[in-house]
Length: 74
Ligand SMILES: [Zn+2]
Image 1 (cartoon, rainbow, N blue to C red):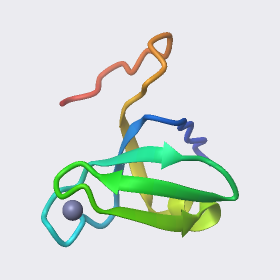
Image 2 (image 1 turned 90 degrees about the horizontal axis):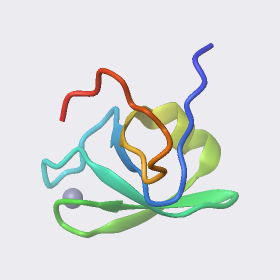
Image 3 (image 1 turned 60 degrees about the horizontal axis):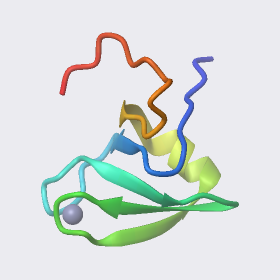
């Protein structure tokens, strides 16, 4: 199984786009639940971590500069 790493401030892409049409979400809170904010309409949602990991497609941009995202197309 592929392990996905994500952290606070990361921009992630979910499997289902937000109703506003934007498919980029920023992680603004980490914990048992994860709060993500839509980059397009600034709407934030709180979802359980397990559900977040299930719906996460990929990490578009990591806030940690030491993480090399090779081959990412932005
Ligand atoms: Zn939105």
